[in-house]
Length: 171
Image 1 (cartoon, rainbow, N blue to C red):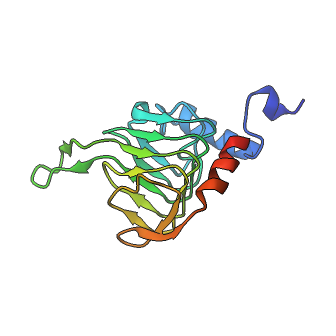
Image 2 (cartoon, rainbow, N blue to C red):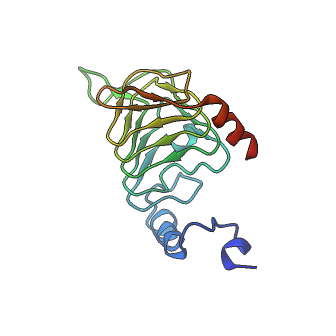
């Protein structure tokens, strides 16, 4: 039995990742309210407001920024790439110290958010939505099974729904 398996750690992550996580989260108290291992360069506000599915570890990639003040729901097997921003709350235009209430961000199952993508408050992404690198998602794509990209994000490709469902059934 490997050391990682004995301690319930993910095989794909290095021991160094877990040592840095321990140092920053447990000793230096950076992201101390996060209950899963994350990259030391990531920042998560409102971790208690994040509902995450199976095999979902928001912030395990470098430089991820998550503001979950209004809530974030992430479906099973969704991957969040480096530099992604999930922003569930905006500041009030006049009183900058206040956050504006908004519906939570909802991200479906088997989604993939590419490098430096930004997802804005109240956005809903359906299952198998792939967000291209650098995309700015300001509206919902609830139907899913698509690739979105650009600023603002728009559908650039539809995915084969039958193939996606067959893949999901293998998990």
